[in-house]
Length: 126
Length: 139
Image 1 (cartoon, rainbow over the protein chains, first blue to last red):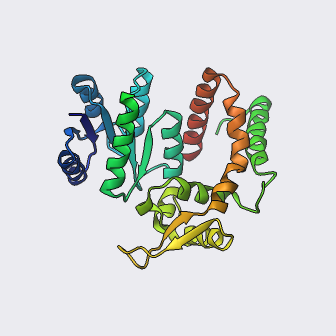
Image 2 (cartoon, rainbow over the protein chains, first blue to last red):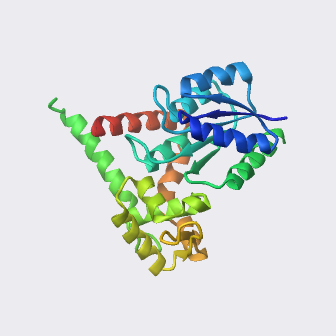
Image 3 (cartoon, chains in turn red, cyan):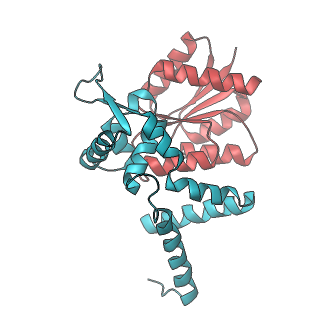
C-alpha cells in the first residue's frame, strides 16, 4: 500500500484529503506545516507528498526547495490557492523551477487529485 | 536609499531591456502579456479552477481585469466557455485548439529556450538572483 504524506495547516483540508486517500486505499501521514513535513519525509519515507503552498513557519515552496536540495526525487504535488504575499503565478513559477511534479489549483475534484496521484506513482515505479 | 553605481544602473537597464524584449514581437497573435498569463493559466489549471475567480487569484488581481482578459480571449477564439453546474454564475473556461496552438508560439518560449541553453548552475544562480531581486522590490 502506497504511503502519502499530506502537509496542510488547515485541519479540515488535511482530514478531507486524507479521507479521500484512505477510501482509495492509500495509507496517509499528516503534517501541519513544512517543518513537520520535512521531518516526516525523513522518518516515514512516503511514496508521495501533497503539500499546501501557503503555511506558517515553513511553507510549501520552502519544503520543496529543501527536499530537492537533498537530491530527492520524491513525487510532490503542490496544492495552491490564494494566500498572503506573492501571487500564485509567481509561486507556481517557483514550484516549476524546483521540480514540483504537479501544481493543483484550488478548488479541485477528488477525482483530479486521485488521477494525478495514480499517474505519478505509476511513473515512479516504472 | 543607497545611491547605485553606474555599473549597477547598467545592470538594471540590461535586465529591464531583456524583460521588455520578450514581448517586442507579439508573435502570431495580438495578445498582451497579461492575456498570455491568463491563457497559460487556463491551459494548465484543473477543470474546477478554470474560472474568472481562479484566474484572479492566480494573477493577484480583482475579478474585473481577470474577467476582461477572459472575455477578450473567448472573443478571439482562444478559450471556450461552458456552464458550471455547481455555480451557474461562474462559467468554466477551456482552452481551444486555436489557443493551444498559439501557446506553442508564445513569446515566452523564446526566453525559455534561451534559458534551456544555459548551464544548470547558471540557471540556478539566475533563479536565486531573480527571487532575491523580486523580494527586494516587493518588500
